[in-house]
Amino acid sequence: LHIIGLDETNHLPWFLLGKAKRALGNPLGAIADLTKAIALNESFIDAYLLRAEVLLVMGQAKEALFDVEKALLLNPEEESSYLLRGCIQEALGNWDAAAADYQNTLELNPFNEEASLLTGRLLITQNRLDEAICFFDELIELKPELAKAYAERGRAKNLKGDKVGAFEDLKKSIELNPTGDEAMRLEGQHSN
Image (cartoon, rainbow, N blue to C red):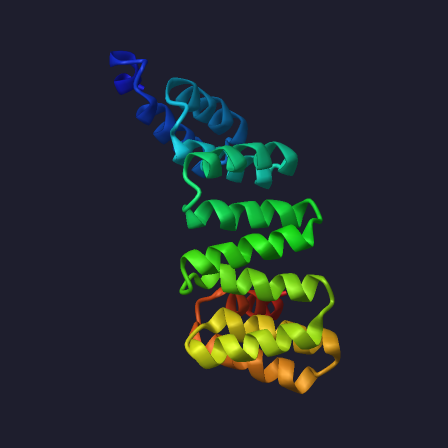
């Protein structure tokens, strides 16, 4: 706040303040500060993307879409913009648009693990379980250390009724990442 007092026309402190408020669980304060940062610098892509993330978490996907579209206009080669727009499109139920954005992300960066995982999860969401399992088979072949790929393939197998295969994938996921989400969920089930 002291830095803002010294120069209220500098967009960066407003952005950092918004980022901090988001981390502290104050989404409305974050949006206000990010909006101020954007007003001071209308080409500040990071502020648009962060505000879009906050809006998406708040369930305001349509508003978030506006911000990510602006970021893409400013830089159409930014992979994180496509990834975020894919998440927004998925939240809006626009599955084809989401899949296209995840694919755009992978075209810009074939090593983007999050885009790969989201592509497979989208197949599961669409109940295209055989395709999801094949997708994760290929992903695991390329990245055998990617614990989340095993967990997601296991989820697809479970939904398909393959309990043994699902258990084996869950077990492998936990072996690869003993402090990951799957292990924590399992630990929570044991303590309940």
